[in-house]
Image 1: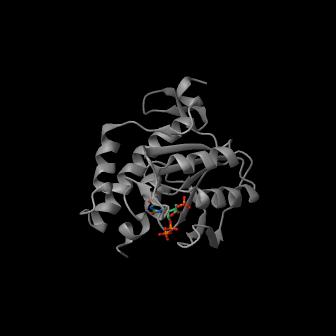
Image 2 (image 1 turned 90 degrees about the vertical axis):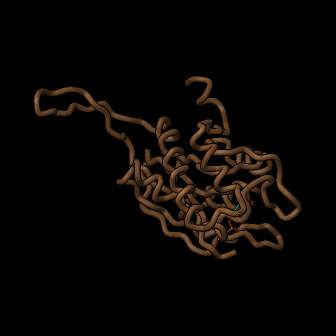
Length: 213
Ligand code: PRP
Ligand code: URA
């Protein structure tokens, strides 16, 4: 294991990701540009996260001879948290088209900030499935804690969490409750405000993505 693999969270450092996060942070960015930036960042995150997947060496026949190659060893299940996690799915599917998708509907009660699970539908998990939880925002961590707990109840053992913006408070909660879950983020922000929003953040990801402001 190299030093990067020991780090948790992994903040993915890439100027293209930084450029897309800047687009998301900008309050003048409209929902269609917001959605396409989320998709591009998701693809960049997918490329990084899939370095941690397991691969089999295989043989492949070119038109000229047999040579060696690789293929994914285990099934990948994407687990977007509704709504905003949905925006990350197509970016991941661009690189892992065979992935299955597990939907988890969780909404924060804006008074108590407590997560409420209102919908869940998951494919069969096999022992070595790699589950990638998708949610753009890791704020208090309540929603992702609820989602990870749900996925573990369904038999998931290998879960990683891909988010766009993480807060120190959310990272601390997930590390405490789920030390086995590696967190990948495009940005690691300063703190939460009194309403549980990430600062500087990007506002309400679901509202900005779907134009429900
Ligand atoms: C947002 C976001 C996360 C959650 C993060 O969803 O997409 O799921 O808040 O906050 P937390 O870490 O404090 O739980 P929201 O509840 O606003 O629902 P939405 O996606 O339907 O807008
Ligand atoms: N959910 C969001 O969409 N944004 C935040 O800043 C916090 C929670």
